[in-house]
Image (tube, rainbow, N blue to C red; front, side, top):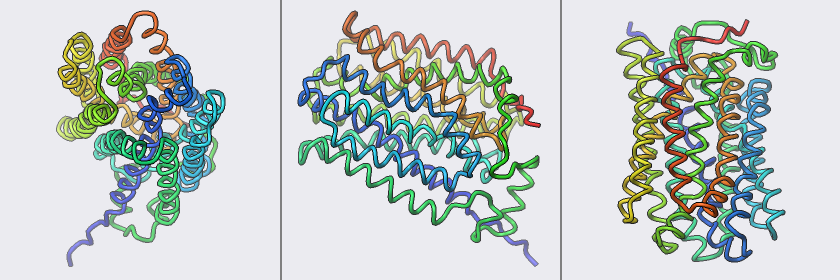
Amino acid sequence: MQPVRPTRVRYVVLAFTVAVYMITYMDRVVISNAAPVIQKEFAFSLVTMGWILSSFRWAYALFQIPGGWLGDRIGPRRALALIVIWWSAFTSLTALAWSAASMIVVRFLFGIGEAGAFPIATRSLSRWMLPGERGFAQGITHAGSRLGAAMTPPLVVWIVTRYNWRAAFVTFGVTGVLWAVAWLFYYRDAPDEHAGSNLAERDLIRSATAGAQRRVGAAVPWRRILSNSGLWYLAAMYFCYNYCLSTYLDWFPTYLHQHRGYDLKQMGFYASLPLLAGTVGDLAGGWLSDALLRRTSNVKRSRRVVAVAGFLLAAAGIVPATLTTDPQTSVIWSCIAFFGLEITVGVSWAIPLDIGGDCAGSVSSVMNMCGNIGGAISPAALAYLVRAYGWNVPFLVASSLCAVGAALYYTKIDASRRIELA
């Protein structure tokens, strides 16, 4: 009698997670691609637009831990559906903004919803993905987010030119609600609760993730989590990463339009290219890290080597992208730099799974909170730096922070040191 082959429900779960990552980035970069039109309609200065962009990121940073706690407390099935519906509503409500203050409030409320997305989604994968699949899983989910972001510029430009900028926000908001309904229908918080997962798949997952599994609703051991020094080095690295990421996501379209001289349609095309390169970087980083792990069984080295290489490539690539006088050469080097930056992200999100186990949602929320403090500082800081020194200095700052991220990975971050949760 042949053994029963394991079902592949975990890959459908992964596909759902990829889809929600796409939606998170589509919803958050609508505004950066509509920014030139919004600035013109409301006569917003670059600094005012910087604070509007920052309002989302401050909410996103400050509500990371509450979001991760919610996923660990009530389970990712209910928690993720709840927050997706919340942020989708405020994506659409951005269309009703009538001033800088109203837009700041709506974007802040939007950020509260999106804050829990990555920690809760990470928690949703912790019960389903095998250790040897985690780097790739995190790579492909973040590739989905960058692909969503890459698809958004031409879509937003098309909607804006055919209708108006408000129609773009309404369109993207509806998409998230549809995803939430499908998620509630399909996903379950553990393989044992899913009717489509057979015993072979459940045994495979259970044997590979041996260790205490916490029940939904169990108290989160925050004292043990927050006293772990390795987590804070991870968080510092992610501050550097997110500062640089925000520079590209929030300002690259405007940079191309105002500094490099591209018109609106050209901007939509060229702004998507680094994001497409980043999509490849996400896939490559996660795959390479898992391949090294399977070959060496050394989780510390397999995460570290890939991340250091990615940060160094980003640091080096940003310099010629910034200093060249040719717009197309700048875009090419920006693609190389963003590819390098994104090589690191699947590795960075695999580490909370490596060290956090069944509290991966809470562990990743601390990392993402600190990272997004960097992301929140970045938009307004860039606006002030541009006003004082021009467009080159903000990108050279990003290059320096990539070098710091590489140093932190090389000297301090160890994916083999699990947090003792009990």
